Amino acid sequence: MAEPIRSCLGCKGRFPQSQLRRLALRKAPLGWAVVFDDARAIPGRGAWVCRDNQLCQERAFKPARLAGAFKIKDGPVRLMTG
Picture 1 (spheres, rainbow, N blue to C red):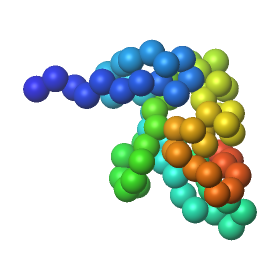
Picture 2 (spheres, helix red, strand yellow):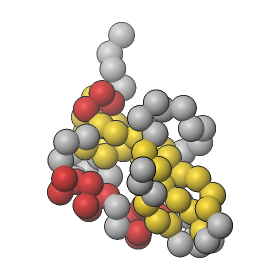
Picture 3 (cartoon, one colour):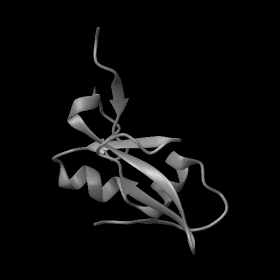
């Protein structure tokens, strides 16, 4: 069975899922938080970004791009690391 193909939020390229890193959405006290979901265990909408490309990650982590990917209209979106 073929591996799923996903689009990178940063470069818009299409790659096998194993070459990308999943982002997931969590409700935070002041809006929404985007977290890395390497285990692919967080339910709900996900977005994908190139695993080893810093430029793709910088582009993908812009608040407007994250809000669009997760279809958020009710509060700020920020990246949570760590």
